[in-house]
Image: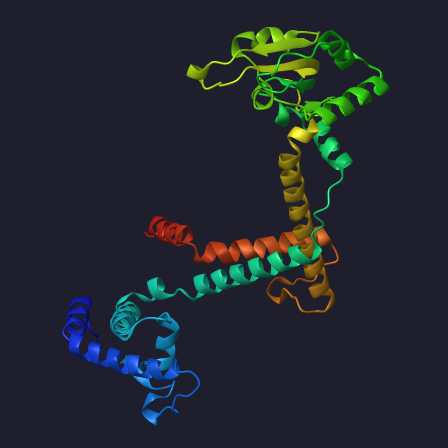
Length: 360
């Protein structure tokens, strides 16, 4: 007689003492299985294959329990964990048995779903391994720039960017006496002049950037230079060297006078296409994603072609003889459509309706 859900769960709940005894036995087995050098050999009743619980002919062994319970627990914690694990195992087996015996056949037929899931796991693991071994992740600067040129709409700027030359002077120190000369040198186009200025800044320990190769947002420049917000618009649009003199204001968290020179050499407006160096990471991600998909598609196609060449694949159920390829394909499609139509609920209803109409 089959056990219904209420009876089965009630029966399991009334056997708490049995579960606890099984747990105690399991803990005893675990104590021996976990014992290291110097322990006595386990007795037969405490071997790894000792059965600590059964349910509908299925056995839970001490070694199975060992895989469930973490190591390093105290005896009391191990006993509690073993009791809970055994109880959960018994409940799971009981409910599985109920599902297998109470559900209609079409609802308990999960083999196809399990097979597909297993196949998906295996394919995913294999493809990950294949990509680790075969995916070329090296990208050249030319590839990045070509992608940007081909997809400019993806990389429009949300805010302006700037290239700049700048020098930051020591805090609480006045401008050097030759500040006018320094200003002219900063604006110079002569490489030797700029090189000499860079050497002077380096020797004096003054932060500087005279190459003007990097693109900055205004906020990024503000982390390096003392940029006063109320003068930002004028400084951003100026074609000349800006002389920055920002007095200390302890109330605003500026304990020292700050001074600098700034020359904006180039600018991009919001809406312009971003420089490649600002979006290189995004482009690399997109290119590698595309390359990954192409690598997998090629591997899959080659794998199937190799399987056909090895005669490992066949489609005997839909093989037809025809000298005309189009006729053969049409025949196969007709056969498949007819087979599907013959077993579909819609067709069954249609046949019933037809019979009713044909009846006298």
